Length: 275
Image (spheres, rainbow, N blue to C red):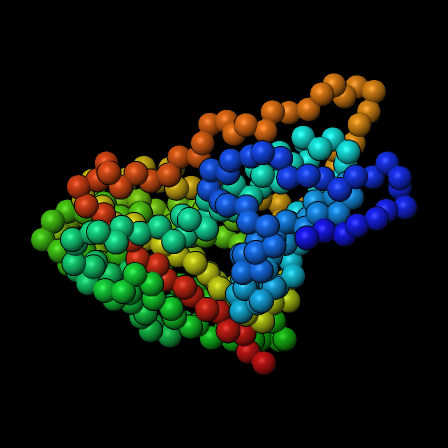
């Protein structure tokens, strides 16, 4: 829904154009939607659904993802739909898996090592694993947490493994892609977890894709978005017409049909700050 009325008599409530989304669906007044389009005169706001994402520590509830203002309706809607297509593709990539895989998932493990304590956290035969890492404080500030990700191939064949990080700006970063011989293991990535901007908790989303065929990590990698940005598209003397709303080249996604077999495992790392 959207607000009605305006002090500006020229302001108009945008009408949703005839657009066929590639990665998402527009449903009017859907109270269970993950993301919400709020319409008011000459303005479009993209929001998180508060009760849906309120428990997500990575993305706070009631967060305005983007504010779009102006009277160039074509440009405003194109901006909104481009943003939503990116977000929807990020969500789909985060949930990516091959439910028809015949591979024994327990033969491949993603192991997170807390380098402060030496404690290991490992995926199992489940598609998703959730672990918790306590963050210590020193002089009132949370310390960085050094970590290491290791991939263990306990199967009897060589496998291609790709490790990806899903950032809170809707980026997907390829951390490493490599082939692992049967019965081997390798360190895939080392770095630090940290709580920034006064946060007391955070969620870090990691995904490992395992395939019997070569992987192209660039097909899953995505640039980030400017979350919370405000943009405007107003008419001027130099403006002529608008932009076509028809989607152009569609985003590529990993094609399971090209692999003999593949599957994915995910790990959610919950960073818990000290009181």
